[in-house]
Amino acid sequence: MKSPMFFLIVATMIGGGHAHAYLYEPQSRNIVRNKNNDGEYCPHCGQGGGPKNVGSRAGGVYPSVLAVNSHGLCGDPFQGQSPTEPTVEQETYMQYTTEPQRTYTGGDVVEFVIGVGTHHKGHFEFRLCEQKIDTSTSREDGQACLNEHVLERADPDVEYGNCVVNDERGDCQPLDPKHPGRWHMPPPNQMVQVAGEHWSDDLKRDISGDLGSLPASGQVFYMRYKIPASVSCAHCTLQWYWATGNSCMYDTDYSTYFKMIAAMGWNSAAWSGFALTNPDKICTSSSYGEEFWNCADIAVLPGGPTPPPTPAPPTPAPPPTPPTPVPTPEPTASGAGFCCWWPNSGDICGSCTSWTDNSEWCGESESKCVGCGGDWCGADPPALPTPAPPPTTAPEPEAEPETESQSETESE
Image 1 (cartoon, rainbow, N blue to C red):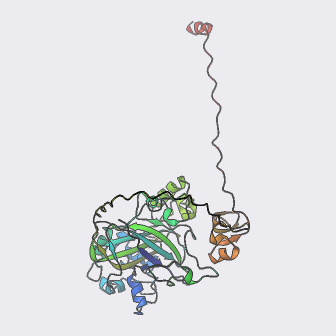
Image 2 (spheres, rainbow, N blue to C red):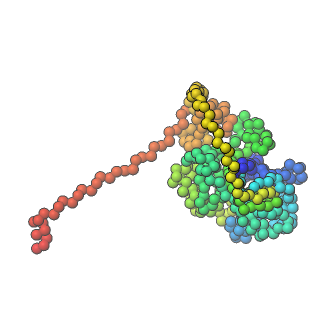
């Protein structure tokens, strides 16, 4: 059973070089509080006080999911708040809960939409607890409940049926066999909305009828996850988690995964600079990367097998119809040029590895490319290198047969 639903995490860019984001759909507790003008002025700041604070509170334990006292389950303390360790009863988003913002059904495939203000690589995870997490919940019990349901990605080959190597759709990335719930951030501008020179909020995708609510600085990613069929709860908690990957990798499994997809032909170096060239660059208890958490209150209806439809009575075959005339193809955009998303060096046009040509809107002209957030190159896209054929080796000469005189000589 599949029902298209939309989750949205939107990020706002602020100064200081930090990456910031928040869970927007279903609306997280911090977003509800912000929209209600109830004292939350930095809804995108749920990073537990920052990596130094999280690492200090972890007491030598890594990763933070194993150090329940290292951070609030919903991101407390938010950036700008006192980094001291509050009790559960003092944490803002254990106190501030809401009614369920959305109701889903067990077994559904849902679409998550994530926006990031600054691209800091890493991966996302989603956990679901079948109860409301609040001040009556200890950190230990809350984390254990969330760990019961680490949501898994839907298989992109099943969902889309046409994914290819280095697909522009970030959700076409291969599943991680070791961690089926991880969704790695693609290189910038792979299926993201970018605020270019001519940005307008009206250009954004219409999500749940909330047109115009996306911040102009947000990069937006789409991905599909599965709600477990066994889940049923009148008031449950969805937790979003982001482990950034610009300063260190979450674990050694990053290298395993990116080597795997590199062998498939994917440009892994554009996804994780450390995985192939510096596999020892792993976060530790003394070098935490920046992390983010948000909580949303939701409900999940019980799923169940869908009864087969009653077969309709056969209908007589319709009379043959005349052949449909072949339509005249529409003219394509004229002129050489392409819109580059992802270069490998300062020579943007000469080293571009991800681009849009003039068959798509963003590649039709320089103004449209700049408006989409790309770099315009007024020439044909660089040709992809043709792999050299494997070297051939000459066959070894066969040994000459032994003569009778040689055999007699050897036997003497």
